[in-house]
Image 1: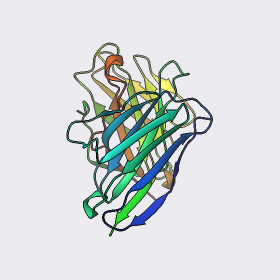
Image 2: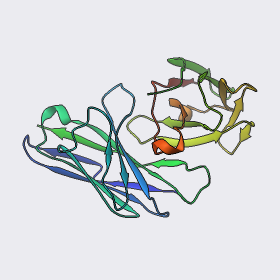
Image 3: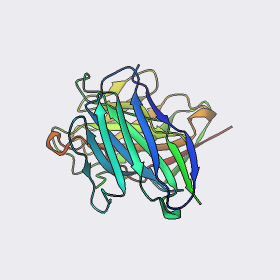
Length: 117
Length: 112
């Protein structure tokens, strides 16, 4: 149990286009999902916390108008990178908090690799 | 901000126990210690977590010191597939949304 999927697994796009990444909790309901970004040889950096039915909370330094987050259901959150530029190229990872478990463990998706040309 | 300190890298011989230390000297009484690992180009994988008592599951054991200022993750019989970056995380307080802040982790290399 506790499986989180992401789609697509990788994407290549031209500079200036927008890219949407989906994060789904497959076998549990996730009232809270999290989005991370990871550059090569670096650790994961939390970008935002996504709560079902409400606005996302962004970490300091993360542009909310550039990284649009929608958490429309208990099993789906989306991250849209708007007007992507080469510096947005990164590994994007989501996680979902299994609220049904007492200790609220987070489970991570496999990640989406974005390359902006 | 990450609240943990881990060695940058470690080696372990295949079949031997891998002991990965973590310091979390500023941990609060209601904060859990979580361990995840990340194999290259994959999402982090949950390993184990604990509050005060030592914990064991099918993957690993977690030993937490009595003062809770440090812990050790033990992989009892390391295999080549255990080569990964291991992250020790102290979970944020409930009123901050339970965010996980990752430190730099320990890069474990299991040697044949």
